[in-house]
Image (cartoon, rainbow, N blue to C red; front, side):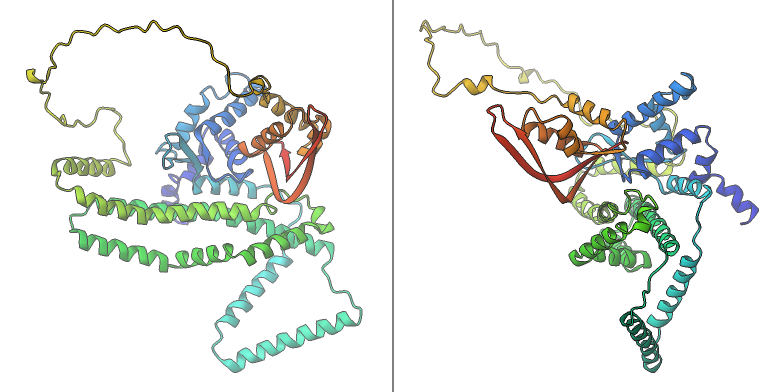
Length: 479
């Protein structure tokens, strides 16, 4: 921690976020929008709507002059090159930008969360974890078979002694304090794992940017450049971080491990000692959070290969050297000024792509308009060949009314199931109203669909016939 290094570190986005004038607004909004809901990315329209609600609430409490800008302007400021608190990007086949937290912003939020005074700090479980890691490292690196056999025999004797104690009726279990201590450590480790994924994804994106810059600025021939890039790509896969992520992804994609993971989580959450800790929704949905985070890293890693494919495709069109030279020059200038973008919008001009030529012979000859001939046949009304009653028996599902029912129910509760809502407000439109509830649960982050549990929803048709549907359990929660 040298003085000059700390002076330079003040330009780090994490430090800049903590020093920002609007830091309370930024960190509070980032935590509720991304960390609390564990959202990997959000669309601009969805994020603007959330920020509008936050600003309205704060201005109602602290006055209308508090945070005077519009929500979209704040998002633009937080995602520009000077701050870099958010990453703004466009997904494939979409013209609406997406936003995601940068690793620097997540580090600032996690550091502030660590400042909270903890009521319970477990030290025994951490020390035992250190002991277990030390033993694992030594055992897996032991090359002497005799020494390894001795260690295994010692473990065998300890296991046999424990089995004998259980047969003798002796109860061997953790006390409630030890269970809570290990559960808190489990939650902390799970949150740290999800937080690390943004940094892993950022590392892959940085590698992708470096490769694009090398392709743009390189003067080497195609063979030499591809050999160098493919060598770097193999080096990434063989690096410690690349091998660790491959091992993680293979483990997560195993159906057996997924089933075991879900079973272990359900058993742990069913313990009375764990219930007293008031666990949040992180662990029950941990598998889905890991899959979503890992998939984003996979897509970022795959974009490097996609860039190489596009580079090879571009070589086919090198006959048009003038256009390629202009594009190459634009890319070079963009890389050169990416740290200090020009303030003027018109900072570069391109020649016209074609000459403005208007030949007289391209004009078409005059054609007099033809007079249309109207038929004098009298139209006769026909008779429909199908039942028309169905055209007048359509019904409309009032989605805002359903949303109002959910919000009203959540005013006194933090969570409510779809069965409870249907018990209080029976379905009037039948299956179409039930599908509308399911669409509301999946359209935003306020609903949870538990595919492991199924429930039966009943309703009466207008003709008095009772109908029912078997569907996953849906829980609406207060956001």
